[in-house]
Length: 135
Image 1 (cartoon, rainbow, N blue to C red):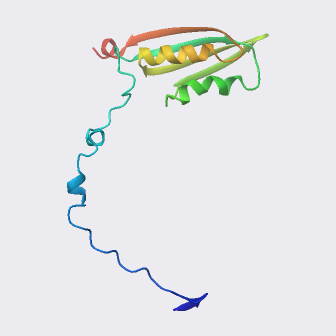
Image 2: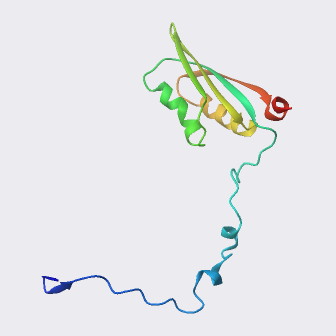
Image 3: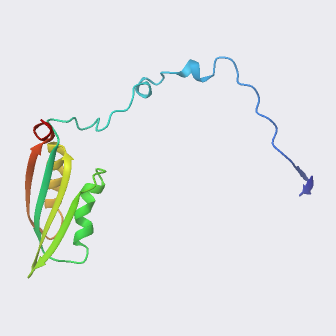
């Protein structure tokens, strides 16, 4: 053992035993919202079957345009399956495709894409529903 500034350095003492009535059994299920299993998208219920959705955009080319277009997807924890951008003259044509995207979520993302500086057009094309495709 070493002495450091007049204190003895050693292992910490063992934890005292738990007091009766304060274990996990007594608090199980409290607060009530923690007792229920979490469901994804609790704030946005699924209105209909998920779709394969394509976003076609036209925008003015700028160095920060493409990362700004990914922000509406990232803040909703959605990863696009395809992101394609091509410059044609003084405009850029961008295609973003997402599979299994709910229609309500697609509408929110399309609204945010239309608000990005430099974007002049957003066209959303929903594909076939998963129920139709699997049948």
